[in-house]
Image 1 (tube, protein in one colour):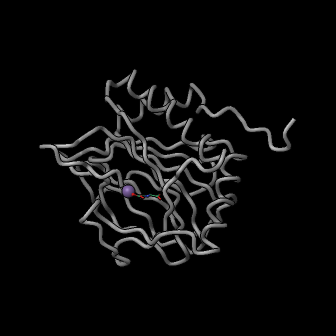
Image 2 (image 1 turned 120 degrees about the vertical axis):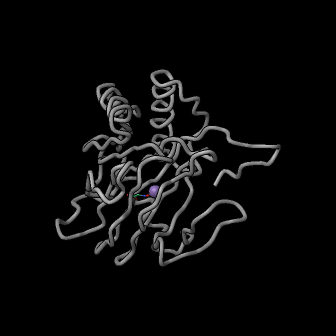
Image 3 (image 1 turned 30 degrees about the vertical axis):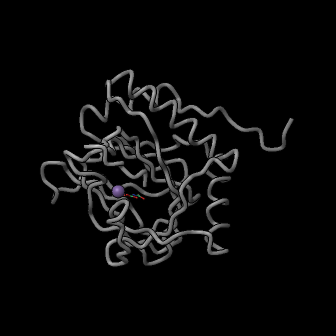
Length: 221
Ligand code: OGA
Ligand code: MN
């Protein structure tokens, strides 16, 4: 027996069904206690350790050559998952299974998943945005897995989801508590991260379709 026996990587089948139904009906899904808390804890420590020794990169907006640092738009620091730990591999494996389930149910042709750790220090936020733009939508479905246990009730840092046809209408407020998992259509669902008052840790990820056009390589990040 290993001291920290790794739980089964897959999301519960019932969760996958509820998630797919919610995506079809409203374009977004939020569930609590979806990601195993032991796994969240290991991932959270991995991220906090990196944050403590400056092992994170300031997050920007835009991709490839259009990448810009804009602290007035987003204030998190990130590290792309690189499979370097068993916990990362386990999280990515669960997402791989979700990708298969999504492709089987919705014929989305998702072929890849990319994800980064995100650390929002106190005061950081991410203004309302879409994760991809129609026509150039190689990010199809966004995921966020939250990692901070015992999120304080006055901690702020909620993710606000807005109505796709009326971006002034708030439809959900997601408390960034360990175990909670959100996913939504990347080119349809406006969302933002409210200013946090507490160090906020998560993994943001995207299921992608290949959108290379005219031989121009689409950068992975
Ligand atoms: C993002 C994002 C939401 C969150 O990284 O694009 O919107 O709750 N993250 O961390
Ligand atoms: Mn986003």
